[in-house]
Image (tube, rainbow, N blue to C red):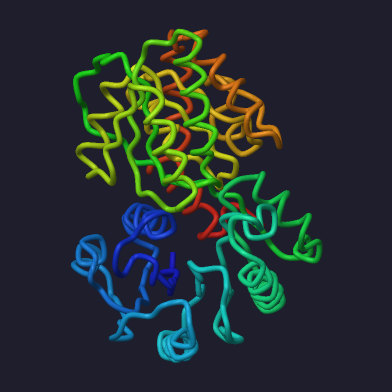
Length: 366
């Protein structure tokens, strides 16, 4: 079989990869194991540890200077277009859905990954200007690209709701790779755990208010919170609630090693997010057989099924907090370890990588 040349825009992996950057890194790392796939990456700079690792085995085309979300994107994407003309790929794969110029690939397909519709479904967390820019950029990308990858069927459904014209394009639901976590002795320190950004979209206000009610109703467990404080209003609420009730430990931004230790030693994992493209922390907590209580989002139900506990997400934050506090008081800790393993396997590098490979090689038709 002839090699399939894939040129991938991996700029999100260039400096400090987080969500999208790590999605690209894990996928490329797994797919590059297939000998008939030839990956070439495009980036602005190669400063991250992940990019330096990838450079050891794959060709990387570097723009040479960091690019942010401003007019410098125009220069970067003109560079991307030059790379396409030079490398003549069978597939050009855009890792960032919003492309500010028209990209052409006369040698093959134009593919883009769609992660979520949050700027449109939850505009209050993004601002009116960015939501308008997102809609404009999506319309532009949909018009010129011919194939789209979704990270969940829920994402596909939401995209088609806002952009019904995309139903006429080729699409593929590939999910996200969640790599296996290292073996650590599993203990129970008696505390609830939350890991993620501290912001409204992630439901941090629900979490803090729920913990206050839980304590006022006689709850005795502590709450450990790890992540970056992203909003002033959440900081203010945090200060207010921690001055009224004891038991909250704020860990700040933690390392990967510390994160794994927190998962392995917590009593249960709390995830009250209002909007998720996938929900990787839930799968990570399941690696260590920890009970999970999460807001009932369609995406999370699709990803984790009925193996975790859910509470309804309502418009009223105080009611949401009460419902979460009730779940915490119920303290249903037993988990179905076999069912957990089945969920974890579904997003393993081997399972997701094989599905992507079959699609890229034409064995799965879109």
